[in-house]
Image 1 (cartoon, rainbow, N blue to C red):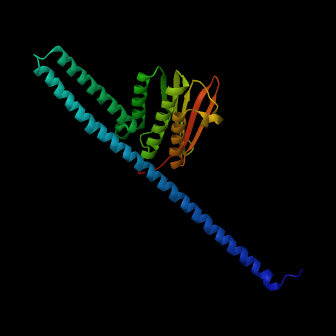
Image 2 (image 1 turned 60 degrees about the vertical axis):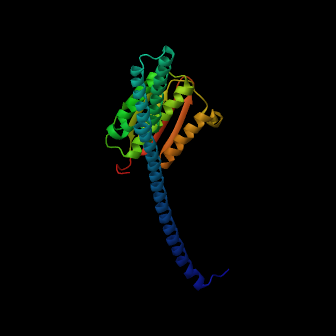
Image 3 (image 1 turned 30 degrees about the vertical axis):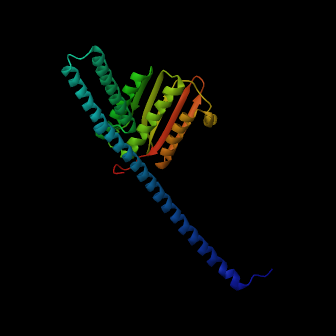
Length: 255
C-alpha cells in the first residue's frame, strides 16, 4: 500500500498534538488531585472544629449548669436541718447523680475533642488520655516518641490522636491484651505511628466479619487517613498480637 506524501507528513504533526494534549491532561489531573486533597483536608479540619465546639459547650455550659444545680442541692441539705432522714437521703442521692452526670459529660467532651490537644500539644494530650485509659482498663500502655512533636500542624496532631484513641478503644473491647506500645517516629517525609498490643490475634482478611462496632471504628480510621493522603495497615498474628501502622504526610502548621 502506497502512503501519500501528504499523509506521511501529517503523522508527526498529529503525534505532536497528541503528546501536547496528553501533557495538558496530565497537568490538569495533578492540579485536580491537589485541589481534592486540599478540600479533603479542609473538610477534616471543619469536622474537628464542629467536634471542638460541641465539646466546649458540653464542658463550659452543660457541665457548669449541672455543677450549679449540685451547689444548690448542697445548700438545700444545710438549710433543711429539720427535714426527715428520708428527704435528706433523696437530696444526697440527687447530688451523687448530678456528680456522676458531670463526670460523664466531661468524659464525653474529652472524647469528642480534648482541649489539652490545642493547649499543650500531642504528647501531653496522649499522656493524659493514656493515664485515664489505664485507670479504666487493666492494661499497661507505653508511649514513645523519637521526634519533636511541638510544631505539628493541627491536622497531624488530630489524626495521630484519633488513631491512638480508636486503637486503644478497640484493644480494650476485643484484644484481651495487657500491654500496648505506641511509637511515633519520622519516616522520610512522613509521620508514622505504630500501635502494637499483645492480645488475641485475628485474621485481617476477615475484617468485615468482625463485630460492627470494631469494623466501623477501623473504617472510620481508614477514611480519616484517606482525607489527609495517609496510609493505614493492620497486621495480626498468633503470639504476636495486633499492630496498627499509619503514615501521614508532614503538613504545614497553618493547615
